[in-house]
Length: 97
Image 1: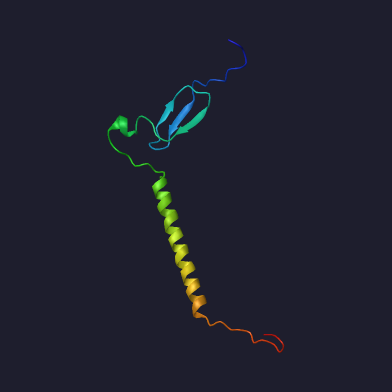
Image 2 (image 1 turned 30 degrees about the horizontal axis):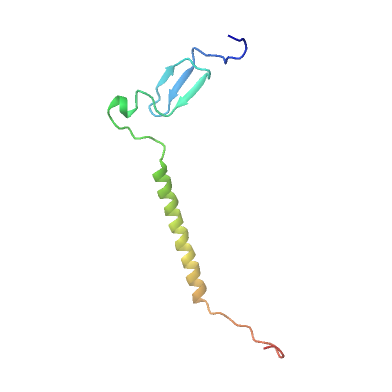
């Protein structure tokens, strides 16, 4: 093996699960790392569903659609106010048609 090309391996590296807050000592090239889900809380291993704290794509889409709907309603109100306001036409000066 060539010397100096391999990364440093930390035998006491800490891996933390953000879902269940479990801490594992796993050899790694990074001293401290986080994972979203581990074997202690994964539905395949536990057999039960545990809702994740992070919102998914569907939630983000619904939130975006709701804000878009509100914006469209605001635009409609503004347009209605414009239509309700009488338009004042300027009088033509002498010599102009």
